Image 1 (cartoon, rainbow, N blue to C red):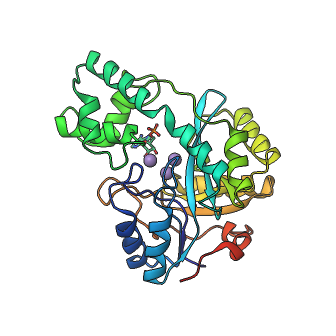
Image 2 (cartoon, rainbow, N blue to C red):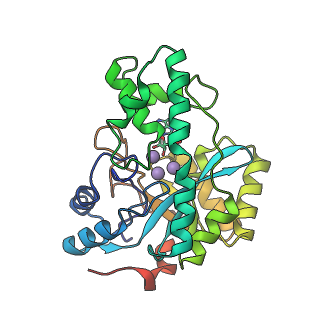
Amino acid sequence: MLNADLHCHSNVSDGTLSPEDVAARAQRNGVALWSLTDHDEVGGQHRARAAAAALGMGYLPGTEISVTFLHKTVHIVGLGFDPDNAQLRQGLADTRGGRERRARDMADELAKAGIPGAFEGALKYVGNPDLISRTHFARYIVETGACADPHEVFRRYLAEGKPGFVPHRWASLKDAVHWITGAGGIAVIAHPGRYDFTPNEEYALFSEFKAHGGQAVEVVTGSHTVPEYQEYADMAREFDLLASRGSDFHDPTESHTDLGTLPNLPGRLTPVWEALADRVLHP
Ligand code: AMP
Ligand code: MN
Ligand code: MN
Ligand code: MN
């Protein structure tokens, strides 16, 4: 099967490598079709595409949109769209818009929890001032010595219900899917195994996503366990969705799944890249 990695991040969002360095790492690891999917942002797309072309990899434009669905944050990946589409760009800009306010509120809460200076601290790790994220706070809190690694920071401070968590209203599911499809792309439910939905809520997510025009789901991702590959392969078949595969790579030391190293998709699924064949940018 084609080594496709259609989910990862650069320092244009909360990854640590430049788009060019992510491209080089993907190519070294054998990736033949790549997509850079920075959170709520397409600012790295032209650089990623040029880097992929120079390295001989196929490329699909990508992004990962933050959505609020049933009071929880859900991520919707978009693939194969026109990165210059005005409506998509405006939608992403609006989605990014509340991040600085949220970050200041998070820093206030963290100060009360004994971690002062977190806004300025997190900013030191930010590559794109429009995109300050919890990941940047996590890196700063590790630097202070309060936690050993980012996972511990999330567990103790940044996950829902913890002292540094500030509820936030992201894009609607309908808008996110429409921005992607309106720009000629395919919308993908990212890492469905990561959401704490009940079976009924998960069913609602998949049905509403489809009703809005969503066409694919991540089955094999760095955020899924091996049993979840089978579980979401079954969901893809049940909902007649295309299947995607992506590492969700952010950083060489933080990420437990490296670019291009995931197992193949399970059988009896249609890979999303087959439906996007005419949108792949060839070197
Ligand atoms: P934000 O968009 O600012 O809410 O940040 C979300 C990002 O935080 C995700 O894209 C992940 O990169 C990271 N993240 C979320 N949960 C965890 C976790 N438990 N451990 C490490 N990173 C996480
Ligand atoms: Mn992230
Ligand atoms: Mn995600
Ligand atoms: Mn991601």
